[in-house]
Length: 261
Ligand code: BV8
Image 1 (cartoon, rainbow, N blue to C red):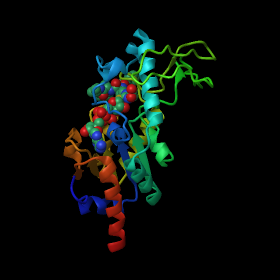
Image 2: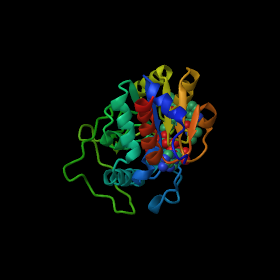
Image 3: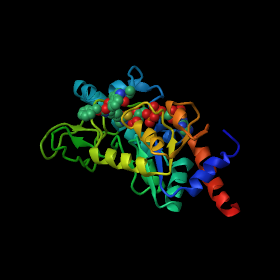
Image 4: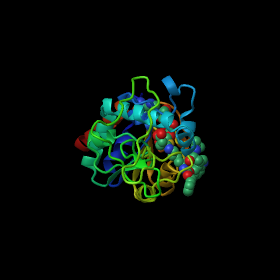
């Protein structure tokens, strides 16, 4: 990682009035939550996440897929927000016109203090039934069988309202994103001065359009990622490094700029 984030990125952030922080799985990596790039482990090692994160996989083997999501939910519950999540909450506190848009299904932004993160791909914590009504599911006090550390098959519960199977409250591949979330994210990207693209491979659509919409509308895109991504070509500044290191350093430098001018 650069010793100190380039002054240009700090100045861009410092001068911004409207900021979008667009995050992917990489922001949660240092909290110990595996990214989609990471190979699956244990029971799911023989699967590709993109094959498992589908309605087809769920209906073919509900216990396997529900068990995967319960194992992930347990992993997230055991994780803590990292300095990258907290740096984003600091940006929101310092720049009221900040919108957090995340592809992640964990709740680490919220637990770090972000108040209204837009979840483009849903949440591990909003299961619902498969019926068209999508009745929300509130787990019973005992919460059902806890996943073993290596994970295992867990039969999904049944909806108390209609008896249909309960499914994870996420957007699977081949499913439409929540219209209100996508509209709000596109509007924020089209109106911002700066978009921080943090920990995303920029490969999953239509979410991957968000940084491109910002760049196309004249915003400066600042990327935070240890690896190159297809977003490199639309970035004004590329900060090669881990979010939990780069973001606190960027926020410090931005408001250092403020003090020193
Ligand atoms: C849809 C929830 C249509 C589930 C997820 C063009 C337009 C529209 C659609 C498509 C299109 N082309 C193809 C499609 C289909 C598909 C798609 O995009 N496929 C890809 C594979 C090409 N899209 C869809 O199916 C979408 N739906 O289009 O529906 C439709 C319309 C109307 C009516 C019906 C249907 C739905 C996509 C959403 C899928 N659900 N998640 C779950 O979590 O189980 S996506 C899932 O994968 C994640 O949410 C995330 O969004 C994505 C992975 O991306 P990243 O977050 O970027 O994570 P990744 O692991 O890839 O990368 C991590 C990055 O972090 C890396 O770059 C790494 O270097 C970096 N990193 C690592 N450590 C750190 C770090 N960075 C910083 N710090 C670190 N420490």
